Image 1: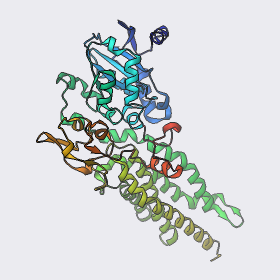
Image 2: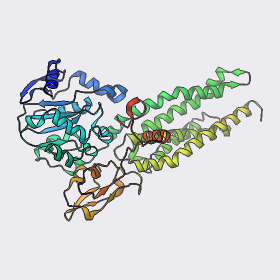
Image 3: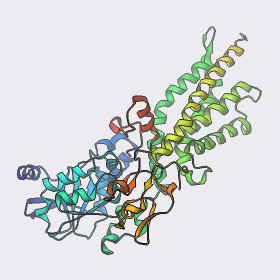
Image 4: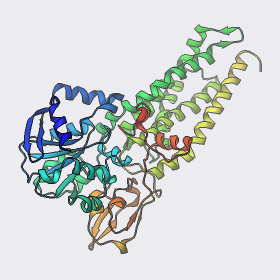
Length: 361
Length: 98
């Protein structure tokens, strides 16, 4: 353990460190409570892309301010955005930060997986020799870590008594000042429109990755002739469907999450279906983009696109703060057969449409 | 915001409760409150089955079938025949771990 600490300190200090502090177990990095430009840029990149998968800090013990052996110990994940969010809230305070190895995943998700867990916390307390750094025996965990950490086992194994602090790092100062008492609000997860919109790129991106495949299918179907593929026709006839496909992605992956509490019904599948139905209605009735007499195409549009939006909206259950597994299972049990059926019926109708167009039936 | 009604697997046996208050400390949905020195359930439909209460109730008063409430994870679980897991290894698909 000593060797590990030495090896660690020999390396160049991380950019977010402002120096080091001498303790009973050797030098420990002091971290800055300010964000650099690189920290902001890292936050943006991790919000929109897979960059976050490797956005981490080395696990271990850090100092913020000028902590003593009686200062609080705050535990967090080694996802850098979790770590950054915490240190930013500690400006002017002196404390220890214990970073667990959560494989660069945030507290909540890591706790769900068990990497922000009882075992890792016990191991990290012992590896960093926390008992020699501080004289007291209390540690503060983010509340959402409670999903993975059994406080009584930690206390039995390490002697440290776990307090589950606020959900949100921005309440940590008030929590400490209130002598480690939480208001009920500090215990609840918030899910504001901003929280939801921030999460939407991660819904839009994967859906858009599959969009070229959908577009190719649509253009192929509309352009296909007994004599070959007519590109002009593919483009002209396929355009409304391409447009509706794009709008459905936005309806399911952006509008539904953003307007979540204002859309009727609790089911995400129904919310997404409603949001997908609106643009189909507008495109076909108001703008009259699809020939109103083309009954088959109209039916396909009304079947397919709301279902697509509904399916995409259902994916957002993974990002919310209030949906449980039993509910999502129930939605899928009812929804999946409907989605598969809808896709099947739509395909058959499109084939009928083509056969009619070619004068076969 | 509340999710579907009457689906949660949360079970609470108040006779085992000692009133330590851990469940109130860990529940992110405000499902528990202290009532006459024991925990009481406010609204079961608020429960998101995260499992923090059951994990931290030393007296075995709470049980809940916890897991990720994520459609992608559950579909993956159905396809591979395993328990739903937010496998973020391949990063791009799911938002479970954002």
